[in-house]
Image (cartoon, rainbow, N blue to C red; front, side):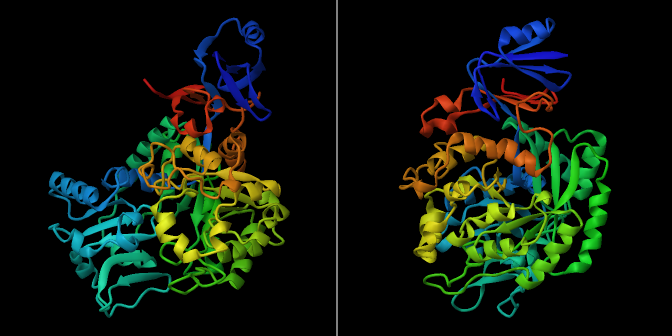
Length: 535
């Protein structure tokens, strides 16, 4: 079957072009003048772009779709903001689900609470235990009943990789940070295999609606009470239900060492030969987040002291990464603080750039480390949505980072100027999965108009505006850049590529920069077949 895309512009590796695209049997056959392509294929269907832009299917290089799908089916707080709104949503969910043993879900925002910390008392109106994961999945909010079931008291020690938040009297407040989340999370009802499959299918539908046709799942394994998603992906890929092109980043258990590599090799082998899913990456979470002071920093935090946590001993880390690299694994790091970024870069010294290693988040980079990305062949995996003024940044981050460290955040322009390769992602469900919202922030360094934080007093004040990048660079990161990281054959509108294509309802390159966020996905194609249509 032939399809001719006409009536708009197309985003290609060479830039935006006023041409048409011909697709034959699910593959891009030609890019050129409309009349010439129509003559090549006299029999064809036509897709009218209606003045919009045709782009490659987006690839999200860092997200958690199965967890997102599970949370969408539970008590999902991510679409609102504020304690009163959260309590109303939780009460409504509890009333509609009287038979549920636990009230679980998540999506709450730290900045909705004084000091970023909710309290167990706020959930004690419930007649059941509650376990609600923070939006960024680095903490959980629980009620007194949940603490009692877990046996958590003032005498319970903190785990090595986490912290039980306590009040001035030493009593647990109901917030569990990092590894402490498992103390309660593992007691919640376990999702069934069917629950996990349903969550993946729901997530895939949602992602197709945003033009995302591929992704890297950044934790395939058991973490923070979540189930191992590998069987879910294997089942979906074998049955044909997985249509997107997906790489799973196998979870590195930070409580173990080299002995787990043999298991990782076996897990990678389980996906060999599958068309839509490969388990060729390993995810190492090297630190936490700035807001709870677990991000690893070089100098102490202001006001509270401490330099955060390096979850993997940096000396052992080099040995682990070297062995993973030798075995052909891609290493995918979580690194927020400047010390964690440096430890990750140090571990990549002497590794093979052909394995396409990357570091995600990169909130703080000490300036002397910026040139090292390109020099080592390490890709910067950007989550642009976070690079704005919002309450979590202005009230829970900047006062504790101080200067000059605050000015080292999300240095996109500096990385690009040094020749760093980019990929990009959302960390969904931590933040909105829509790539156009991320591009808006990368270009403007302000909150998109539809964000729950758009009304914050400084949300439209550019955050470190010197680190803006242009729309072409941002869109390339979400298309060719992330497809490259996944070794996907898609990612560009050029002959011979799979016809994973997206029709946008307008051309964001013709919009004022402040309106990029208004762009929506009208049609999504995978292998030339429609998988989403905005009716």
